[in-house]
Each structure stands twice: as structure tokens, then as C-alpha cells.
Length: 349
Ligand code: MRU
Image (tube, rainbow, N blue to C red; front, side, top):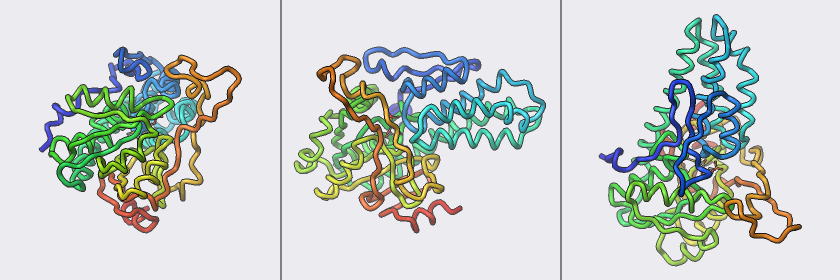
């Protein structure tokens, strides 16, 4: 049994009863400050500007954003409130396009409203709380399921930040790694920097440090050399959207890790809650890949490093084809060699 309190000390979101506080991930690791969001436009801005990021965390934030929007609505029934909240749902939904968790959380909140009477405000708040708690429970379950697939003494490479900061707590891929450390299955952790926003360098290794877990930072471009060295047996990443055929959107750079892993015989694991599975999306070809400001790429942490006049292309997610994924882990179970048939069995309509 994992000592979760020992291995999970960070929280990205705090609900105060009248506002959502976001740990400002733009300022980590050097400053731990919270941004107070008292209405839904502030929540949408926080999601868009990466104050909070990570697929499950932005879904949870959007759910609380809708609770805040509901505070300004006078309606006698849930369906009336749902109509009044349509614009707020749109504003929150548009904050970022790639992670399905945002739309998933808002659709779930919408279903609760559609089925509520005059108590819709309490039910909306209870649902946001349930989404938060279920995500934490899913992460703990995935931690056990994913780490059980590893042999003792394994080395892992992870990408981006998939930890407590990106979820309700514990993390997806980083939850598997935490659970693996607790059980002795994970001995070496390598984290890629994750250019351009540096989620790996600024967030993942900091988060592990909070738990007293040792990790080693590598340049993204060191991945092939690292795998060739024999120090890692698994690449473990999260996901922003998993399609009906198993194709997976995740942080830019994930697909090249999968290609290199296959070349060197390193196993590739995707870890995500079922809220990240989008069975309505046939394949990765249909996923909107978020494009962000080229300025993120033309400098490091706000300081320009590239000559003026140079252009940059900044897609922030990519698609890993299902054929390069050895295993997808959700809280519902493990899908080995994912394809359309296995996904359909795991997630029946
Ligand atoms: O742009 P970000 O930082 O929101 O991207 C996050 C990722 O790509 C994560 O790997 C993914 O959301 C899973 S987080 C548990």
C-alpha cells in the first residue's frame, strides 16, 4: 500500500467557497503564489495563460469556473440555468482546444444541470467536487496498475508534467512513477525539459523534489542517446486526448519519443484517466493541435534568445500513433497494444 501523503504534496487548485485559487505554474519553481479567480472569465484566462495546465487539471478548473458562473444566475430549475449558462460554457470550452477533459467536465456539469431542480447550484458544486475527487482516485488506481507492469529496478523517462500539478493530485504518468518508486520498481527517473514551456524542467523535477524523490533532468534532444545507453526501460507519458483507435495527443515531442523508444526496444506507456478518452474521435487526424505564441519558442522564460526577424512555428501537442504505444493505462484497466477493437472493448458505447 502506497503512503499517498508521503508521495503527493502539491495541489494546483484550491476552492475557497467563493473563488478558485490557482497555483501560478508560470512562476514555478521559484515562486509559489496563487492567482484568485472569482468569476468564470478569470478561470478561462487562467487556463488559457497556463496558470493551471495539464489535461485533468484544466477540466477540474473549468468545472469550478461553471460553479462560479452559476453564482450570477437566477433560475428556478437546472434546465433554465443551463440555458443561462450557455455563454459561460462556451468561454470555458474555448480556453484551450486539445485536451478533451475540458469539454468532458463541462458536458458532465451540463448533464447535472439538465437533471436538477431548484437545488441546481448545490448540485453543480457537488459535481465539481466529485470530478475533483474521482480524478485523484483514478490517479492512485492508475499508479498501481501502471507500476505493476514494471520489473524492479527499472529506469523511466517522462515528458512534460503529468503530476499533482496537472491533476487533482498524485498525477497520471507521474503517479505511475511515484507508485513505482514506492514499490521499488522504479529506480531511475529521467525527465525531459519539454521545450518550449519547460514543464519538465520547471515543474516535474520540482514536484518530485517536494516528495524527496530523486530525478535527473535531460535535454529533450538527449532522449535517443539516453535510450541507447540502456538506462531506461520505459517511457511513461500522459495524454490530452486518446482516440477510438488508440492514437494519442500529448505534449509536443511525445511522438518522437515513441519512435525512438520503438527503435531501442524501450516500452512506451500512456497513462490517463477515462476522462481523457474520446471515443467520438475516430483517429488522431481529427484532433485540433493547439498553436501557441511563437514568442514561447523565441526565448526562454520571457528572455529573447533568438535574433529579431526570425519566425517560429509552435504547435504544442503532437499525435502518437496507436501502433507505437505498448500500453494505455486508465483507472478502468490496462490496454496492451491498443487498437480500435481493444479500445471499443475497454470503452463500450
Ligand atoms: O500544455 P500543457 O502543459 O497543458 O500540456 C500538458 C500535457 O501534455 C500533459 O502530458 C497532459 O495534459 C497530461 S497531464 C496529466
